[in-house]
Image (cartoon, rainbow, N blue to C red; front, side, top):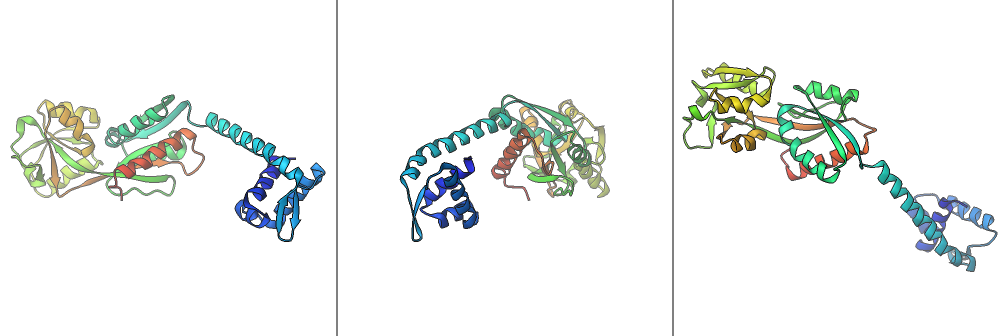
Length: 300
């Protein structure tokens, strides 16, 4: 006797016959009938009385129902316990992120993850380009990647989940704030201003270079690769900074003014993962990322 036989027996009992039981189990009816006959041979008794197309439990069948349910339920309980042990109880999850999405939405997602899975340690490595993030996930040095790009990211090598769009904003140097009382500026309003610029290749640097190419006289006061230097430099009065909107809460907490820039340019943020064989810890992170897309429905 095995558990499969007991499950099939209970299906016939619960669905009132072989036809509906076979449909529920998604097997052919002859296979179900053969399994029940095999169980009856092993037990040496008939479990059902066959009356035309109907089946009725025999006395032996009635006696088997209770113990069969106990066995099946205990097996499901045991499997659930093993799945829990195999699941997200402890361990480490390796993540790689570019700087701006590493501020948000990564911070919010890590917060949600830590609340759900407090025993898992997240190790977050840094990358500066989408190619670096993709390569890390593809080769397995990280299970999860977070990147920002100038367009919706696509890849044939890894799975891509689009998270949100972050418009670029101007973090204003308080010593050179002559932009008026509005909440947005045009690129031409940067005429004559000094800016702290990101390194070439970034979307933020592209906006500054595009303004220069359009004849707007912007002076690059400093070019920094380390984004952690941006807010201190703005606070020190070195220049304004063009950054994704993920930096807005930090800038405002530091007492800095943040303005929109028209026409709007957006950073497309996505999470990457391997196509298969994810650890439970990584899958749990993707579940949180999927919830983020529901809460922030700006993703394309």
